Amino acid sequence: MRCPSQDLAGNPLSNHELASCHDASGHLLLQPGLAAPLVTVPMNVSDSAFAYIYATPDAAYDRVRIFVNDFPSAANETNAWRLVDKEFSFNATQIRAGITLGMDGRQFVTNASAWDGKVTVQFDVHDDNTMASDAVALKIAPILTHHHLQKVETIVATGANDTDPIQQGFVNGMEAGRVAAGITNPLYLFTQSDDIWAQDFFEPAYASMPGPNGPISIRVMLRSAQSTRTGGRQVFEQLRGPGIGGFQPEGGERYFGHLEINSYGNLETIPPYTSKAGIKYPAGRIIQGKHFEKRTASAMSTFLDSQGLQKPLILETGWLLIGHVDEFVQFVPSNKTGLGFTIAIADTVSAINVLNNVAATGNGGVRAISFNGSLDNTFLVTEEELKTTVDETLANATFIAVNAYAQKYIDLNLVTLLSEIPIQPEDVIKIPVLFKDLNLDASGFTTRADGLPSHTDTVMSDEHLVVAFSPAAINGVVIGKTYLCPKPWGPVVDGKDALETAVRDAYAQAGMELVMVEDFLSHHVGLGEVHCGSNTLRETNVVWWE
Figure 1 (cartoon, rainbow, N blue to C red):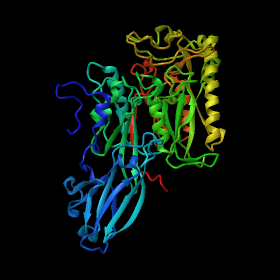
Figure 2: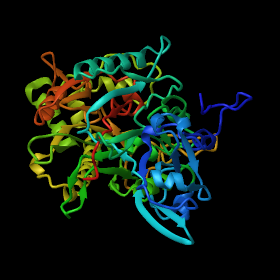
Figure 3: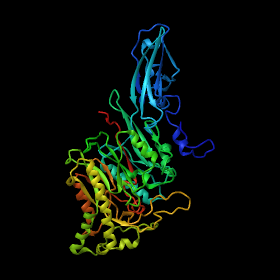
Figure 4: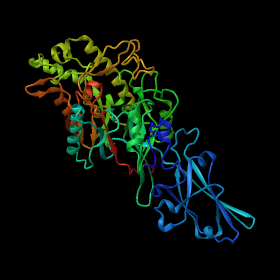
């Protein structure tokens, strides 16, 4: 293995050391097929002619590599290429024949104020005390995040063994969903960490460029800006390989520790559209959540802004304890909007109406949450909650007020989305979801004794930090017209889950077929759902430059 994860003494490498080794960190062109091709036109020169080829400006020279191909018949082999330094000179024979070059990047664009990805390759030919020059301008391909209209190729989750039957049950549910969705690639399982939140510690992304037979692309796995979250190391220890790179944001404000605002459940992507202001987003546009005055890690926000194509649209997620955008909004395929997609968003009003309808038919004595399993080793959902009836839930003034509070922020975020995306309000799909307040003190979710920052924020004055009351259907996986949905465990009347029926009816507006995945004990009691516990690798051969 070229890039190890341990030093010679068997100690794990630091985060920085782990990410520093990659295909472009040395002097060899290890992936010739991914290099951008350049050729010079054959020139008629004297025997004394020589030439230089180099990249400018200095910021680009330090961040890209130029190689010359000495053996055209072996162009796909590493040993056919030599690294070209700015002092490397080409002779008259090479100039006359035309020079075949390949160029790749040593690093991504991480901060456009330092380097915006633009490079000019200069070709200077010296002959008989004269110099002729030519130049070509290029730009490194941006790193782009996936949206839900891109085809799913692989579903990702965290593996389990016989000692964790609950997580194994979730994995089995995702496997059934894979089969139902027609995904031929096997389920990909993380095996080097027990971090079950596969959505959060990495974000699949990609880079693509024009090629002779269509786009040439690579996957780029983004590690979360959470320096102490060891599950993210799997980006480099398990995922990285041929055609798959990794990026790790480092340093800056709010990078240290494991802040939930920096999890990638707090990053989703609107499919391609042209905004109401006329701005085109051919690869889609990122959405992220802020927590009132608090923002995501500066290293990651600068990286995303610097890509230039998917400038994040900021929503408000500070009303949620975990605070991720995937807790209340997603984008699903639709033939009604003219865009190929629509907004699906959590809706407490329709969810409360489900409870009211159950009560109105004389069934208010059934449990509001119908889950029947054991709650051993859980503390965020109690046995008392599971005993609460629909009538008792509706009579709980705090519960009603908390859901009205959540709806206020959902509505404000929807206004932001509709002011940007040309979708009519009546085409938005409202997904029934209920919320609750955990009634935490001002310390937030975790008061830590190890000196690390709390994962979550403190409760602000006159605000709440809410979580899903029952498994939130909005937090599932979109695979074309198939939807892997958290089983909602709503009130059961005449053998049917009333909340599940309402959820199915809502997604039916987009023609979605639902596959219910059981996640109550695996993820819901840990304040997440199916989407939080999984990820998807989607198609990368995307033309975004036309």
